Length: 119
Image (tube, rainbow, N blue to C red):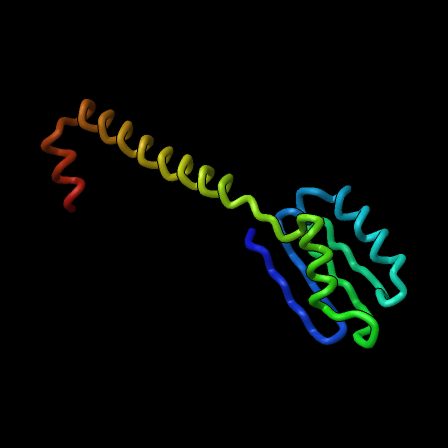
């Protein structure tokens, strides 16, 4: 999941892998945000990995709130794990195809396999 940020004059929405995977830490910051008078409401969609913060733009701006959530790790992503996961998945597909071709060659012969591959 890539990090998504949407800012308007009165609302900040953040969707990220961190929010999805660390609900306890997110809930702690939401409690702190709700104590700020300028924050009018916070909506946490746990299974979507999303938090929307509605605020009074005369007292606080979206960039200040964004700095706060960023300092708590909400914008961190786990790109490395996604890279490894994709590499393993692609490697597994290649391995399975290779094993299937070897088994087919042994079962019906290499000439027939070549003919089927180019058909």
